[in-house]
Length: 398
Image (cartoon, rainbow, N blue to C red; front, top):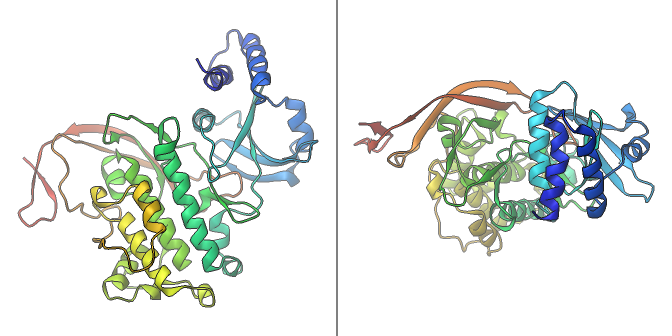
């Protein structure tokens, strides 16, 4: 067992084992000291001024998050697990397990852990600026980000997702890419955060079927309707964020065009009419590069196509984002949204998962999200064979 895995194993034992509790914590402290990942509880108490309310950054399903300053001057963010949150415990454990294995400029950095009696804490780098949603969707803040900065944020998110999908130890599907889970540092470098819903992706499978968990307006239609999860679900969410960055509009409560049900549909209509630039946020008028914006609208629409097989991979997207305007030869098809028909029929023998939905409002450690986050537990799972509708509209059951 490698040192990071051994550390993680020891860290997670106190969550679920009441026996040998003292021994588990002693083992954790020894191993974490070697890894320099262990934070004594007293250090975090001092750094956060005893978790003072003035240092509280936000609260999610796991519990509160506090800003702290270590004696060496480093600023940190401390996630403190709520004693009463069962769902928070699961997400907290999941985030610890996944982030212990990743390190990238565009993924929030987990600095260490603390297990002290009933107290369980995760310690992160502190990200100075607010989350993207707080800047992008508030009229008083939108002027802060010019086109160059939004352009660079898009590229940074793409690189972070490419790392998660292809560059880390295992393929990781985030499952909840959205503006409120993108943190911005003091140089506006984006950091993907909140891995409580993330999933490791089996290398030998094209997709997995799972309970639906994510945020309205960002979830891919095949995932919402069937529980069909692949890396293309993250690609869809990324495309939504791209279009939100360009337009300054939030997809989940879009109301700018009365004839369009979503930002995606509006963007597609304008694209087909050759008027992509009309989607642009008025705050970008002085800094915009029209040809670049048109190309990025095209890329956003390619990511949000109804058929997941037509969406590019993150590797392809990183290449596309580096191209000169006018050089893309791919034409997007109609975007998908929950309830829309997936036009290419589903593969024979695929599982369709249905379930019931509940709602909660988790947030990152920099903000409290106003988006509804859906968690649906699958109640039935059936395997069917399909033939195509003769009109090409939907798969039909034999």
